[in-house]
Image (cartoon, rainbow, N blue to C red; front, side, top):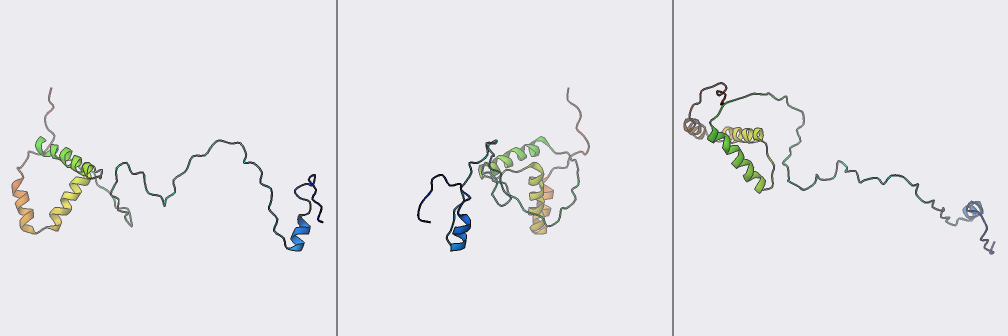
Length: 133
């Protein structure tokens, strides 16, 4: 078995090598010509680092409630300012998230601070503002 045959097929002699305990490398076929597949992100990978989102994975989805409210234009413009501050810190935030964060801050503080904040807010007539022409 010392003579090497160049015309031998890849399958010949493999049973003899297995019987003698030698390792046999299988010939690799070239990959089939198909569309190049893009890299698919896996759930374990981090999201792209465009703008870091703060995410908290809830154990169970809580039902959401849709509501509308009226506020003065100056208070509404605070959303833009606060959103910009968050973006500069690397966190993208929505208006509803800012409202909820404000609720968390008010709820976590002492009652005196809550009452002071409520007194600082001017009352607004409820309902939709008139249409401007």
